[in-house]
Image (cartoon, helix red, strand yellow):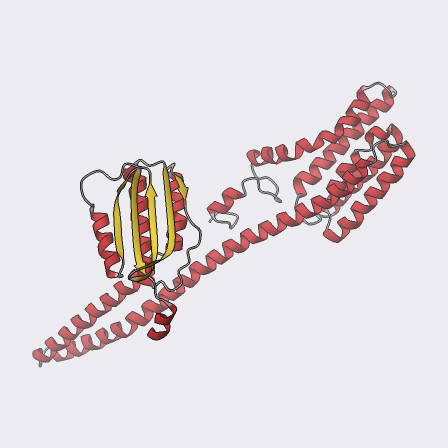
Length: 396
């Protein structure tokens, strides 16, 4: 988890911190690179001021007003993009932009009417949704009236002003939704981890509570019997040893159950591992595990882990394909996992310890393993039986 409550992978996705003020100089630079290209509509006012059509006093006043307008626009959008309406300061900047757009367009001519684009963008990005609808509409109406007054030539700009305002409202809502979803994902992950801890604590309590209580009781009995009845005390000690061994077995089974790998999790990890190793990976999404017992799923997950480990460490492959398919065989339906790469395979002759242990694990689950070199690489195929619906009903 990171300091803003998001997991590391989500924090990487949110590198530009959309909808939030920048915290570092790098984040500020990235935000500016997103905002500055939209200043293209200021080209007409700049060209108007440099053309010499105005008096020196009007030119100076125009430059001052243009700089003030641009500064106010960058400030309000840079700091409040994707946030709710932020108080009097933001309200004053928004009002200033609207007033400057009207005054400059009326006094300096139609070349300045493009300022209404920035006003519309600011309204859509900073004002609350209901207020933004009315503000964008009024800004468009004001532009039409000013255009009629100054003789606007390109009336398509009216449509640009209207659509950009509504588009920014949609972007703002999308940013908020994205941030809320990321926080929700982090919360769900945290809750799942807490629930797993609670479940482990409950199971360990249920497993060890009775055993430890019995050990304590028999220890006390052995202590009282030891001086006068050493034979009976020895029997109590033997009982303590038996209970302790059984408790140890129960704990090991519980821990192995918690550590049992899941095929969907291993597929996700496979994509990450192969990509990190520079191997082009083709990995399926969520597999269909209908009718697959947990032991069989665990065996396939171990097979996938072993195969991917061999691809990354020994094969020297550049491409790897993973398939999970349901097939019908002479022995009945099976779930098949196939891992194929274009590498040279692991060094040495015969199967290694990993494949040997994997074969034993699959056989224990009623499955089979096939592994060997092919024409252009290495292929591993693991199969486990699948319970048919009738078999499931009969078993129940």
